[in-house]
Image 1: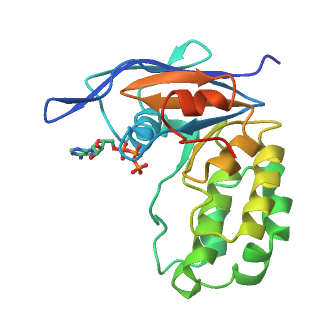
Image 2: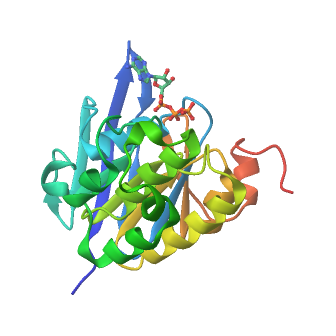
Length: 221
Ligand SMILES: Nc1ncnc2c1ncn2[C@@H]1O[C@H](COP(=O)(O)OP(=O)(O)OP(=O)(O)O)[C@@H](O)[C@H]1O
């Protein structure tokens, strides 16, 4: 079967007359990881929320394999990890996972130490970093064909970031993943393609040097 393709273009997003996003083209196929980089406030989270359907810009065109998508979250076509904690505190973890996990990943979730050790507990009983890991897992292993991750590497330790990159790569064998984080080295590591948002435009990054040229990095290490 042909891989599904999520396409986003012609986005116009303004706040108080200030143009945040004005010329966006973003494509992601099932089977690939697309990394988005950009300075604080350039519109990365906004773009993910527009694709997911929880932020309505003046204009957008989002489609999956040619079918116009108004709200990505409808019918669980797109899943989204927000920058901030989102899970309700009082619910048992195994009950949260029950209806959202893709059967193809239920063994992976069950074997992950966070789920294995805490599934009988509630969200309120986890540390900040444990909670973040669980939130990431529930989105990555969800039934959606496309997964959007806003700052998945922030708040987790380096060793767990390494493990997360392996999980993302495995998941991307059958899903499309778009992610952003200020830990750009992790984004460069895990992504098949990089898109930089600058001055409201998306620019494909062909080489690390482009990140200096466009003023995202001051130098290359
Ligand atoms: N509800 C809102 N009202 C007004 N301005 C907003 C609103 N939400 C976001 N903005 C502005 O839109 C711009 C883009 O915000 P967004 O959160 O998408 O940026 P970002 O690239 O994800 O930033 P960061 O890397 O700092 O998380 C920012 O300048 C922000 O101040």
